[in-house]
Image 1 (cartoon, rainbow, N blue to C red):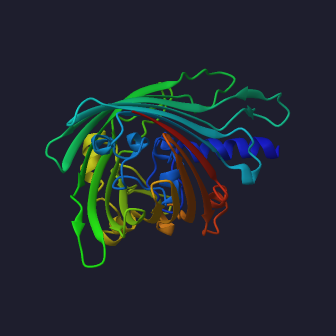
Image 2 (cartoon, one colour; image 1 turned 45 degrees about the vertical axis):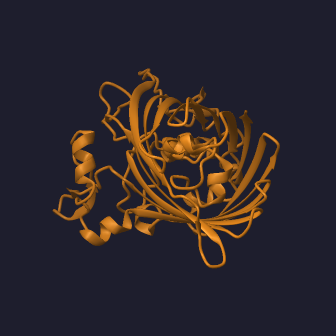
Length: 376
């Protein structure tokens, strides 16, 4: 029975963002999961960090600033091991190719599953097995508009079968599409009094796409359309020592539950999301919170990361991620390290939650592993 209860818990966790108070809910929230160890070690951010092979998820506009001609990268993240789940994981593969000094193309594939789950309607029934999963394929084209600034567009196809198959129904997988628009600015290196430095800025409006539903009679749900804004500064002390400070803000561009749900005594017992299309939802998301401007501010997540790099061969990272307690309550510290040997990069990160919520502590101890091979 405990395993069945856990199964429904996991299904619910994947289908929507953490539901606490007036949390903004979406389907296929796994599209937002950080895939790589370097970004995860920096507080799960990457929109304005220095370019790498995993930029596809965070900001593909960064690719044209890479020095290598092309590269291949893969990562693996085992999930929720601390609560006894043995077969949940996220796997990711990336490839990028620099066409010329001004343009590049890139692609990635992601597969997320919460493993084999036994489901039944009644305690005495023999459970049947499901393997809920989401897979995603996307491609990007990046163009430099100047020596310091670039833009990228991304197309994405995803398929999700995170569904509950009852005895009298057989819901099919949900297939849909989305698009991203991203930009990246990197200044020239400038000499200061005791060090050199450069600035970076980035943005990414991701997962622009229609609402989805899992069966003909089901409710339509928003996908996690999201805005990321970031900045970074590199302190370049000499040819071997560099320290980067990275800051990122992100907000879901999805309506806040704001329509009152009343009980029989006309008392407000909750809120539901507005029934609008995704484009209208983007504009509503900036001013529809029932608590007004202060609640809108609470919907902005913050991450801060520090990265020390020695001789482009060894890196140490630490980061912090904060989400308001009424909007999910995720708060955690991340640690990471990276090694570069010739054309190969190896990265590792570890997540330590600072939240007391049972739902959030399921992420505690998350390890991520990344591998990159750079060509030419």
